Amino acid sequence: MPARALDTSVTAAAQRVIGAAGDGSLRPRHAKQLRKIMEEVAPVVDNFVRIAERGNQLARSSAQLAHDVEQLATAVDDFATKRAETR
Image 1 (tube, rainbow, N blue to C red):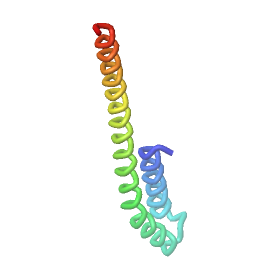
Image 2 (image 1 turned 180 degrees about the vertical axis):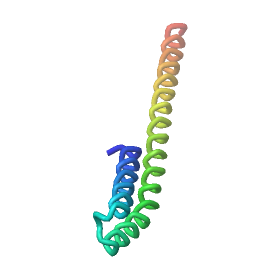
Image 3 (image 1 turned 30 degrees about the vertical axis):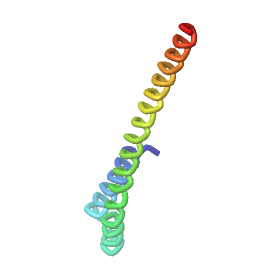
Image 4 (image 1 turned 60 degrees about the vertical axis):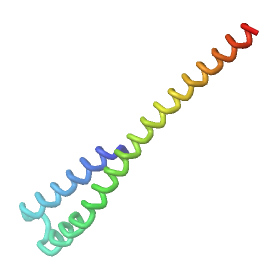
């Protein structure tokens, strides 16, 4: 599951818990327990989202680096070929 989807999913779950607590479909004790769990889970999800976003940035950077190295290798090969032809 992508990081943003997980974040959205957890947020939606939290909103359902809060809504259920507000409309009386949860016992107050259960609502309190669920709120506490959601409060504890939220920072973990936030950290996961940040880590996943950083991972995506690193993957994009790695792809760009691989492309740049490939271009450099082509340029070196072209140079070596031209140099060999001039000898």
